[in-house]
Structure formats: structure tokens, C-alpha cells
Length: 409
Image (tube, rainbow, N blue to C red):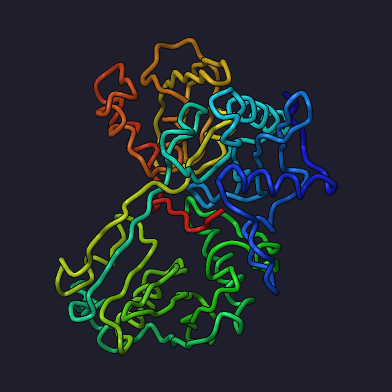
């Protein structure tokens, strides 16, 4: 079997093969773009062929940036379009492609890679661990009243509406530049968020509000008229569905949530992507107003260079841990001393006794601060070698806010 990057000449073969792997057909092109695969980068696509030249498997990466705790931005290849023809499954094609891809990424000097898992049982064996989570929040319109904040000062601001901002409703087609600019500011401040390169917006590839699918957009502007948040939504059969609410400011999020919750002629509002610990649920007069469903993993992380990845992110307390890290898929087993001082980390090889022993997939899960190491200790995946090691790891790996990723790829 041969695995090699595609060229312009065989990119159509790549597209046909990945669609065949999932039993689908490439969509008919629509004016303005919108095809999910139109943002693929030809030289980052891999095509697996049999000895007689038949295409049987595909894998690709997008060029993204990932925001780490501490608002550090690092390159993050986003793995996508992974598929094997039904006739060639369980014959080692997927394993060979993933090994080829990860080896190539390491050779390029990448710190990590990320993906969205179509099935949760596939990618752990290749070293990926779930690192961010998302949920759907459904709110009946008659229970949607927001409570007056109890904190001194916050109540007065809420009562007077003194975030001094305004909300304007625009059609998706009217505000492309606003969406791109607001999202870019948001993702730079949100741990776990991925960039949306300009080509995605220009090609309108992906899900709403990137795609050309008709949407209304509630744009929030600050007191100076500068857009600082938006909510993309649609209504159908009495349900208002919010694709995403984008802002790094909690007060702006509340203003946008209030706007959609007070929308006339709907019986319920559905927020498609809300972090499980988001304060919105606690802002309702009726705590039970918001029904959480679809709680699931979203972004999976795979570390490729453990020391550099740990030194890249920000840290919020001092301490040190010895991590014994096993990477069975790439045949590595190393021990590192992680030392954190004044928000930065040093990570070097050591022969000291370990505090924690863990698989590379579990290090990926805790890396962004969205999974507590102690949870994986209790689950039997991480081994703590001394009392207090798990609690220290929890404190060290936490982020300034829960990591969250909205971008679909």
C-alpha cells in the first residue's frame, strides 16, 4: 500500500474516495460555496492506494491555531476526512494512515494535533483524548425569565440595562466581516477554541453561520458601536435554535441570551453549544428551566512533543510533578519533570520516581484543563503514586476558564 499527499490532479479522487467511505455522494456545488470539503488544503490530504493503484483510504489536516490556557496560540493541525472504503476495512489501512500522518506531523515539528471524533471508540488507540465538551440547552419560552443578579452592583447594572450596548438583527449575508472579526477576537481569549481561517469564511465552508444557509444574526455592539458579540439563529415550527453565541464577555452573552429568549412567536429556545458549567443555567429564575441534553465530547487532543506542549501553555499556580507518559502507538515511553513557576513551565527528562503514570491519550484529555486528572485516576486510567499527587495535578492543569470549542471541521 502507498500513502502519499494528493496533488491538484488527484484531489477529485480524494473527494470521491472519502465520500464513498461514508456512503455518500459529493454535494452539487452551490453558488457562494458551502461544501464542507471546499476548505481542504490539497497538500495536507493523504490518499492511500493499493499495490495496483486503487484508492482505498483518505486522511487530511486543516491549518488551525488552538488557544491554550493563558491565551497562548499554537499551530494545531485539525485532522479530518478520515475514511476507508468498506471493502478494505479491518485490514490495517486506517492504522497505516494514522501512523503515517502522525509521523509526518512530528517531523514537521508540530506540538499537537486535534480532531472531532465521529465515533468515540476510534481515536483513543492513536493517542487522542477528549479535551473539550459541549451540550445542548433547551429552554421553554414560558420559563425563560432571567433572575436579577444578587451580587452587589451587578443587580443595579442589570436593572438599568447599563451594559450600555445594543443588539441589532442582521441577515447572515449582510454581516460576514462582522462575524469573522468577532469570532477571531473571541477565539484568541477562549481556551480550547480554534481559529477559523479566512478561506473558511470566503468559501463559506462548514456549518452555519459559516455556510450560506440562511440565518439571522443578533449582533451586539458596545457603547461605542463596535461589534463585540453575536448569536446566529433560525426559527422553525415554534423553536428558535441558536447555532452559536460568540463573545468573550459574560455580560454580552447574557444580553444576547436575553434577546433570543424574549423572541416572539416561539415556544422554546435551543442553544446548540453550551459548556456544561456555563452560568446561563444559574441565571434563570427557575433553575430547572434549562434542560441539558446531548452532553458530549467535542475537541480531541493528541500531544506530539510532550515537553514543548507543556511549556507552551500558561499555568496558574506553582508546583512540580513527575509524569511517566506511555505512548504505545508511536512506541515511546518517557518520564518528565514538570516544574511550574510564575505561570510558565519547564519540562525535562528525569529518572525520578513518578507522581503520575498515564497514557498519552489521558495527557491529551487533561492538557487544556477541561478534564480533571483526579477524574481519570478514579476511572482507573491514571495511576497516582503518592497521596496528594492527583489533587496537585488538578490544581496545576486547571485553566482560567473551561475550555470550549465551537468550530466544526
